[in-house]
Length: 581
Image (cartoon, rainbow, N blue to C red; front, side, top):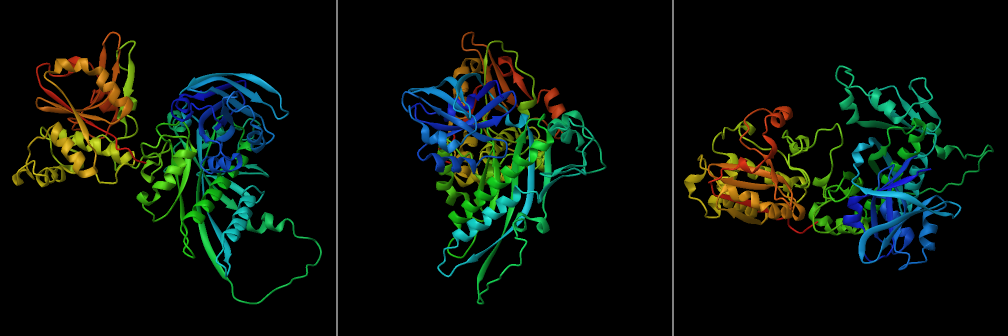
């Protein structure tokens, strides 16, 4: 039994309500520690709310209890009943304050005891991520009255039962390992086989090269799903006597769909392998149910949509979620659907978190970045400011610099490249699907709005912070604030304004001064002493996409106030996030 609880700081800051009303809490349950990663909206109907959350959760993350102010809601019998006979956590919060007072554990027998807890940041990708993929055919009849939903539900229930049966096996890619309810095959002869054993066994497909320790830690295990149709659960209850068959002739319409499952589960590395199949089956079952929900919501009459899963890890949550969307329906038409998800998970409705562009890249996978490097600042050493607080860009961006895209802009295109990095941030956060603008597109945009003369297109003329703000507004509808200083020496006094920007907006900043432009990704600022360091992404780099060179040579890193030209005038273009989902 777990002896402590870790409560996600993001759960408390972004999802916990201050009205004292009950909210479901969900997370991972380990032998030694329980990690609470997120919570739901206020519980209206306990069963309906529980089902809505579970459709969004990957395997290994479960609803573990609820948060409530017991003085506001002393009777939570219906919630306890919905959670069943298992042990349940009660996070006691106080009305009027988004904070946790204490955490209790209610055992299956009804005994209550306090449990030690801490509030901290939790990295869901510190667990081992497992993806299971398969194509499952689903066939159901189309009644004359057009009410096909019960037929689909019956088929989904049958499929879900089979996924938990002995007829389902999981094959670990690039290995001889098979996992199932009946046993695990192809594993080392040891009683101590854990998930970490599987991670260590994984080899590169090309050449069979064994992965290094670092590569293994960042691996995502891929499992293929096989279902034995000759030994399916549907045949297990066939009576031994001779059956009497009644049949009826006539025409019947049948709908044939294929569910393309891509389910995710997370495991502690020390989880015994024999315990994996229940969680893997749970993840698949949740996704089948979510796909049924999506098909029912978005299919019209006898035209059926294809349901597609997307995995998201919102910047304001430490949890991983899977959302299912109808293929071919654009994001703009799914706004109300996404709003339901935000509300279900008690997440702010002021930014995109579950658009298709918000889908995450798993450890060991190449992000969909077009070959550009993503979030290089995450690899730089800490700043030298002691006692400061770090405020950084929120979310993902790509690094754009001189000489990329087979285009020579050395010594004149730094502001263009910084602008490209800014646009990439809005793309990765799901605000826009506009392509990263080329130099020519940027120049043509400025000509089109009347800021430049026609001969500006194709030239090697510089642009500044104002032009960057004009292009952001015109191409992707993003407004910007301009913060100016008369000399570079004054930038050290702007720590409070920059910290507030990264805290509230979280967007990268383009700064131009003298003959140079840079991108500010964060500040490390001590409000007491005024000490400050700037996290700089330098677009003047002309080399290959080599992370070690970029970090070691300081093309991305922390810079002190003396980095700036002390006598040059600087303008900062500070993009403001549009309020949308």
